[in-house]
Length: 399
Image 1 (cartoon, rainbow, N blue to C red):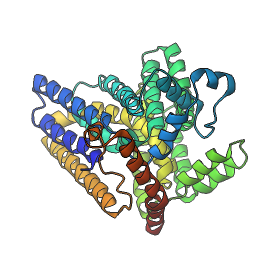
Image 2: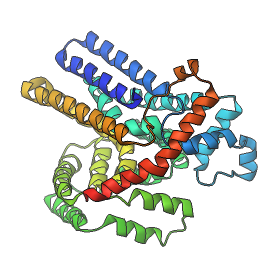
Image 3: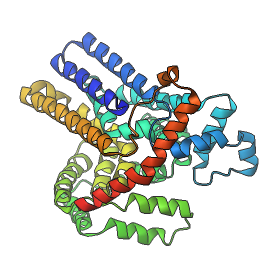
Image 4: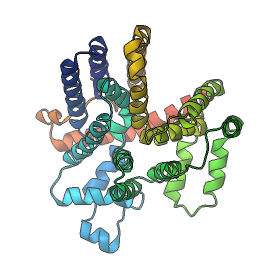
């Protein structure tokens, strides 16, 4: 069984039920609550799962005490100090590695629950899209999951004009993952630019600037910039890894056209509110980083849940009034689910490591903790040695 596809399939079915009975409020609420709990449960029970445990487990097992870190720093220089401190505190109070991952999952789903309170209908559909697009982060990438949670909470705090809370959460996000610096600075900058008037001339200037990026290698620009920055070797290698794979050019122009239209609609339309800001930023990120897919996937997770909630909120009336619109959404829903699951299964079949094979907390009924950890670490090692290299090679062949 491949654990990562289970919540996607389940949410797909529950979303279909939600579309069938849009006016039965009680049923809709019950469907959402059940779908939310099942999704949360499936993600929470993962145990030593995924390729990133190759670095996360040694960090958790060997991290120093909080008092030692505050006085002397940490030996884990490759990790952000905020995440190292979270690991240290969790271990100090007696948490196991699984319970620590459980707490991270709980934080993320708590954040998503708060975000989904901003819409009244189609919450299950929104949750489906969030899990679909960010399932890799949910199951594997603990640091970014924490950083994204803090970022979304900071955005909600800013929207509610709770500025002190916004500052604290922003600092926590930045100290948990380096990529949060970009997301937080860009959001703060966008929130505070009120001088840009929504005129056709400004739109044309933005349009020309963005179209120029279709012919510029963002990879070369980024490598040129980081060569002048005082970054440590680990950070430089991480950036170089995330920008080494570029997508095929023939798909880029379609993405540019769609993103630029959305930039105009959401960014320069007369209707403005706090939720339109991350939508504007999201499509800017798509335009700038689509060629470098890994880099885009790193940044999009900060804005994707907010964008999904905002778009569904905007489309609510259209979905209810137009049956064809609803039918197209349902077809798209199943198409996304089908292609995602097919891609995961094909990836699993081709992999040397079989890293996606399920290991959950219930695996302890069959094996000891050490046996599960040893087997999972071995699979993670094989993944980084063979599967990841093959993935990069295949992506380059597609260019």
